[in-house]
Amino acid sequence: MCGIVAYIGHRQAYPVILKGLKRLEYRGYDSAGVAMLNNGLHVYKKKGKVAELEDLLTGKDMNSSIGIGHTRWATHGEPNDKNAHPHTSGDKKLTIVHNGIIENYLQIKKELIQRGHQFSGDTDTEVLIHFIEEIKKQNQCSTEEAIRVALKRVVGAYVIVVLDVDNPDTLIAARKGSPLVIGIGKGEHFLASDASPIVEYTKEVVFVNDYEMAIIKADELILKNSSNEIQTPYIQKLDIELAAIEKSGYDHFMLKEIFEQPQTIFDSLRGRLDAKGGTVILGGLREYTTSFESAQRIIIVACGTSWHAGLVAEYMFEELTRIPVEVEYASEFRYRNPVIREGDIIIAISQSGETADTLVAMESAKEKGAVIFGICNVVGSSISRTSHAGVYTHAGPEIGVASTKAFTAQLAVLCLMALKIGHEKGSIPHKRYLQLLHELEAIPEKVEETLKLNDAIKKMAEKYKNAHDFLYLGRGYNFPVALEGALKLKEISYIHAEGYAAAEMKHGPIALVDENLPVVFVATKDAYYEKIISNIQEVKARKGKVIVVVTQGDKNIPALADDVIEVPEADELVAPIINVIPLQLLAYHIGVLKGYDVDKPRNLAKSVTVE
Ligand code: F6R
Image (cartoon, rainbow, N blue to C red; front, side):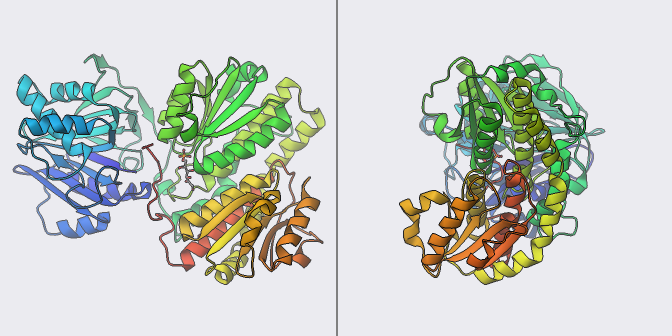
């Protein structure tokens, strides 16, 4: 989704902003722009990549120590030069970059047109800056005051940064519902939608809260709430290193992140799991263990890959804690007026911690009195701050748009939670509890071993890359893995792929099976093993191409399959963490072989901050 970078200080603003916009490219965008103050206001914007904007600006005088920049992911108005940000007021004194959506912009636009305002594009953002200009004129007030008044009228979500020609030493920012991080340097400030453009300059940051406004000079940061009262900024230390947001020799972030998984899963478990001592420590759960023990129901809300992690968690929690679990698409849950009863706990799962649907779903459940537990990867994100309590996944920054390491870290954390709650509740036999702790502890090593399949899977990708459709099938714990495999493939290779519960195949999808259809089965040794062999036979009988993920040493399935992927043996409860790895690799290689930009697939955004 859209990204903001802004700078004020003693450096040249343009290189900082340009580099920052490149760091935010992973979020997904379709146009980019910058505004600088250099003997007046200069705004440059362009449809396309940041590199195209850079080409446009080569040779131009960009000398300025204050500036704002933006990558736009179109919502209102098609992606083109005029709809790109920054947008400027009618008098060309104010310019703005904005993430989010102003829902009531059409009404405001109508009023402004009646007052003589003219608009060059179709965006809600242009309306907002004209609205601020109009209030400033009507009320004869400062830009800061005009922004405050305007935002009181605005319905929707936003982060804005405004540059005012008449106040060349000040940036004004405000947020509601979209993230904004301010990096604090010596005599300089960096503003961005996430920490990645900031981390190479400073580790000291402030996460701006909803309804706060920041008035930023080179050496001063003033935070105010919507009632104009000064707030004390809470300065936090970033715990990410620059290397974490660079490719480190890999061709793509996605491949790097797939290969990081032994480490990231280890990091998710570190300090939390002690298999020998038989303990699980989850600080975030401490005060809520009894709420979970007595919970009548757990409702998991999430989107996309995080929703798939929720589906695996449903199996884990029901088995280990005997608490009924429902897994909901956040986008459906939020609009459905769901029944929330006393004793219900909501678990919100999100890599970015900014997904608008998930955030609103949990906010509405919170209003109805539910306890909200967040599982997020991004520290300080909106979802983590809106939760009553939660656990971070500690997978490190995920830059590739297709989620990989965040998914396996989510599974590791959810498994730890289910084990902890089940153990405290007494719903897991002690022997099984200890066995699963050891199983979980062994996962990083088994993932490492699974990654050795990379070359073999690349060859398989070569063989199947021209297929038009894929079917992914699994049962039990492997059913959500099949869904995730299909999602990965369609996201980055643009091949149509469906994930199904294998037994559902005969209720419809089997009609698709012919000699051109690759069918990927996830059929490791588990309680459904015999059953899924029958499903494989059903596909084989119809001449489908069968690719199967099996447990090492499997003696039955290879004879039925066209291609076999052997993964290390693991208990069915933790096996999804291993079994998804070959599916990530298959999708990656097919995407690359087809020549697509796997890190930035078309139309997709890394953090989906609009509903
Ligand atoms: C898939 C993918 C998306 C996200 C979804 C939720 O590879 O990345 O489906 O999983 O947009 O995002 P988060 O987890 O940030 O809430």
